[in-house]
Length: 358
Image (cartoon, rainbow, N blue to C red):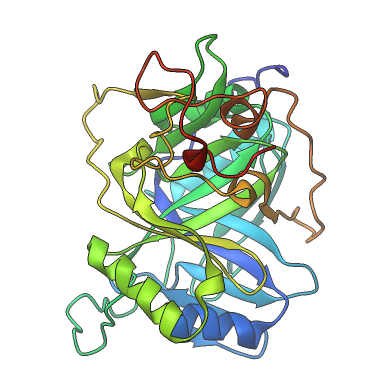
């Protein structure tokens, strides 16, 4: 484990929720076809270089920005804060940490005003903003809904080598852990952290990082996710489905993982639970419990553990990736040196439940 990130004396900004992600894509037309024509996100604004998209229930300008560029990557994980003064707090908080900090009164993306961007201590490009252009909330526009309508941005998921170090820093930033995955020794493989009262606004997944594991959009119900699968099948785009549909043990949510034309991972997610009480208990899963990642015990494909998107620094350059030194979740659960169980006390499962072997 690397050294703990110091706790700043300066108070953290009061973060409301994850608000949008800026993705660099190499073929803007192909990405538009995927996110708009297939997944049904709403175009708020677009030009030859950039497309701003939102979900049906969103009232700010966008939840996703697609920007054309030479290297597919995540350029910003953006959070909305409670007041304009929280931008000053973000500057002070990260300056004290010795991070690179930039601020633009005109914002970094269309429809967003005064914003702070930082290269955080984990190497991720974080943005904080309050001012945002309001647009029509389409929640009542059932004439526009599709069977797989995406109604909200739900969360991010980040890959980082040292999960406890990341969690301590995020707690200093005001996040609270809702669930995690550990082994009997107390080693932590992943943790879910929230600001809004759901299971997470972001998660820290142990692995080589910093990298972006996925962005997740919510549907209203499970059948919306099935409709997306059926649509992908009908369009002969079923190879965009990486994993699922299924139900997570962690979060209890129904899920589907897709890969966009650049390989960015997108989760479609629904029906997790309320976590807003101050004494909300943390749920800890045994890393060897085969129902933690999929409640039905379905195998997890190897790519889901090993592949993730590059993240950029504030100059637009790919951040170097630091290898994880602790054991990987995949290695300890499948393969010659790993094991998983369905019932506690058992140390093996039928081979057909193991999936990819190392």
